[in-house]
Image (cartoon, rainbow, N blue to C red):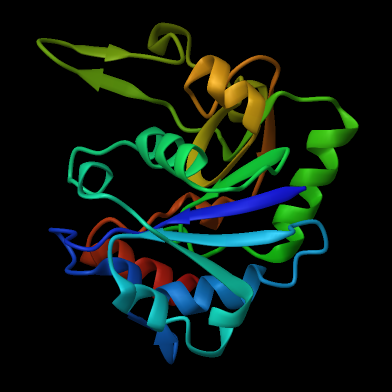
Length: 217
């Protein structure tokens, strides 16, 4: 059995209630659910929120989604996704084998992404998996001094020979429920990557992100 757990708390600061912001003729939450609800592998969809208003924003899709009321302790600005997962698994009767943590702030996700990722997760016997975008950017770090992170600027490689890196795009994470109890972390053991399209590296964090995502979708 597979459960897709979607955390969506109220009270976001940079964009007020960004999880239900107007988006493509509906709201962000409803938009994402419409794109994933017909996954052929996922048995249960769970919205973990501190707000029943968010659940109502799913409109007709509510009948296909379980609502879990998050506690105040897991709905703070500082609350980690791990705290929501732990709370949900402890307090619900969910006995699914696999959990997918999905974040609606990356609205590029589709059911085909999830179904392909689940297939690969099982086929290659991964313990956990994350969605990502392949990167060929030259990365620098600025603290006291500038420092190149992933290449030697004195011997700049050609782009076609440059070692590729992966950026987590924050769309979804897959893991076994039993392993989460053991490691207390969404990523552990033999970790797999599900590569998504380049544009999916944009997450909704501020209004500039919203402008970019609106143009790309």
